[in-house]
Length: 174
Image (cartoon, one colour):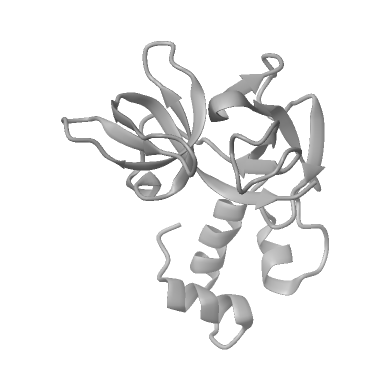
């Protein structure tokens, strides 16, 4: 979002005033109405639910159930304070221990490539060349433009080329 975390926190908890241009940037980022953001009156302009677009199963591979139009899915989960373009995956099995069967992984992918914000974070990743979609922690690989993909209970996948990566925004029991 481009905001200093301390300034944002002060704006969020009301200990510091906020200029209209900054509020407009926050409203655009969270995709809410600026009037609602500043006053709390009216509707936020956000959806209450986000679409579920697939499953995460054996080997932590994402198993999409269908090709959905953007913003669509086969089920929905409560969005909470997440951006409205977020989507969810349902965990199947125990390959993601300590995460449990049925839990929800929430992410949003707003571009291709691997943003620097993905490094050293748990992400949803698409391995290049028709590779699988996985939930992994991303580290820089030993070779240029490659990454090491780490799991909690499996050996790392080293020097992987990725089509895209998106940070996990939320993990919740269902």
